Image (tube, rainbow, N blue to C red; front, side, top):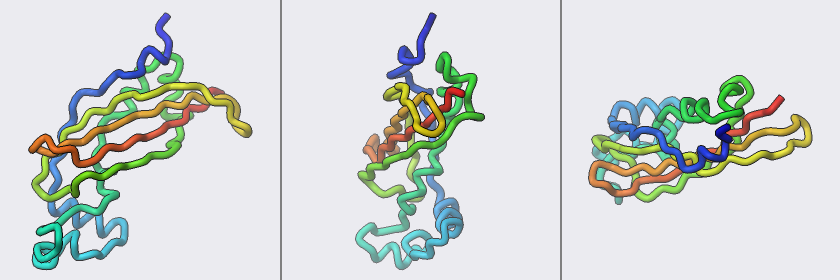
Length: 152
């Protein structure tokens, strides 16, 4: 029988996301950030970035189908999403996201392990890595996301 740890290293298909100026503006409005770097072309053009950039948290708009990867993990998938919690995430930025960027990324299962919780009992921990490159094959950001899946 296949076990959950045999899925470490498995990757999603490649996803593509186009960064659009309107999406950057709408995202900035949604998070309450009125920095003109995110919508004012004249202001942003005179900055050290030379044009509009996306807020750092815009990287959350890069959505692949993490759930489908998780659902394929034996002994874990049947508990998704009812018993799943977002544990944490960490993002490392290399270049700002700009309007017109075409971002390509894959999601990779980096680790799976069991942890015993004090209040909610045993859980499976799944760590996923995402590496994002732009249309010039330049690394723009990486992020690691941890999911907790309760066993009971």
